[in-house]
Length: 86
Image (cartoon, rainbow, N blue to C red; front, side):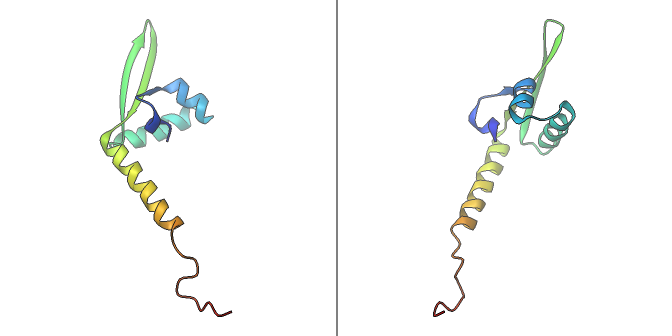
């Protein structure tokens, strides 16, 4: 996840980097905010709205758990429980 590698990122950066539509990104970020994984900061630059996102501690923990689960899957022996004589 991009937010794991930066202190925060704004809406336009995420939209352009992820090649998502405004609606898709808004929908994803809303779900992440509701789960407590992302903090949202809304402000104005002059008269232009500015929205930035930051990974929360809960979000970092969930991401770490996700990577750990993937590591477990990668480390599974595909031959475990099979007769290796053939």
